[in-house]
Image (tube, rainbow, N blue to C red; front, side, top):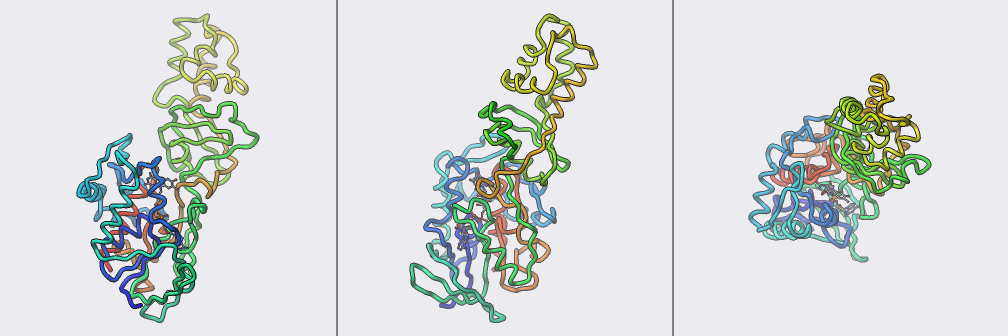
Length: 389
Ligand code: FDA
């Protein structure tokens, strides 16, 4: 069968691209259903974009690469699209936009758009073999024991990253890109909880509080959650994308407040109050008890010298923690790294050295923050490619 465009991957980027690319497009996916990550995203309501999308919210070896696609298909364009499909939405927090109803509405919308554009979809289909004769890509596809050979002018790699293999994530895009001479920025799990040895925080498991988490390369003020195995919550997931193996993170347990001033004031007002009781008014008492295992929290407020207050305040606003590692691909929401942007056109997502080969979505070395940014990259890069082919 001769077609114009073969898209590998019926996820967010692949379907968006197909809806733009139009007739002569075949989207192939090995999963039984399209857009599985959309379906489970945002607790089933899909955090489909963010009001604050801007290039600075994306990580890449080349931070400029994402600019063109994001500028030419914005969060407002996507809102327009879902508006035309009558999908109701709301802002939850920090500009994060969610469906009022179910995430499956977004999948249904993309399928309708693909159908209207004349693109076709083949599910439960594996790529058994791929070759390139200099001008066309020839793919041998297998579906439930039946073989189909497709010859396409364009090949779009939209099979995503490596996160959550249980959901069908594979390294197919990287393998194909490597065969065609594109470079790969080593993929790493991103937006992922940290692990610590010896169940260090298990006594605090389930406790959540607002913090400012920081590494040398970034800082986020959001909630942090203690887990049996370590730390999670939005502040930690965000900072995990900036963290490197072996590094420490710094956690400010009282962001935006001045604990030294608060303790000095409390000392003036109620000197006979126990220090741990006074701290229990600033922080969850369970956490104060935990901190008391390593910090000296004995005595009354009146016993505290200014020097001790300063040292204590420093410990609370600069708690240094060295994660053992992360929960890895099993739970990572995204893949950092991927197909290097230096081999791709930022306007069309086409490989500079292989005309007709395109890479979009999470497979590219562009990774967004938590909060709808990764879907926006899928919509923007998918559209840039779909319009170009
Ligand atoms: P995506 O992974 O969506 O699609 C790739 C497709 O390729 C899949 O359908 C897969 O089956 C197929 N495929 C893979 N290997 C194949 C092979 N060898 N052969 C054939 N097909 C193959 N982002 C966000 O902005 N807001 C959110 O709320 C969330 N929430 C969220 C929750 C969870 C649990 C996860 C894991 C991730 C998120 N994300 C998110 C991230 C977001 O889901 C992700 O960035 C996009 O889905 C990426 O879109 P892609 O189309 O690039 O890949």
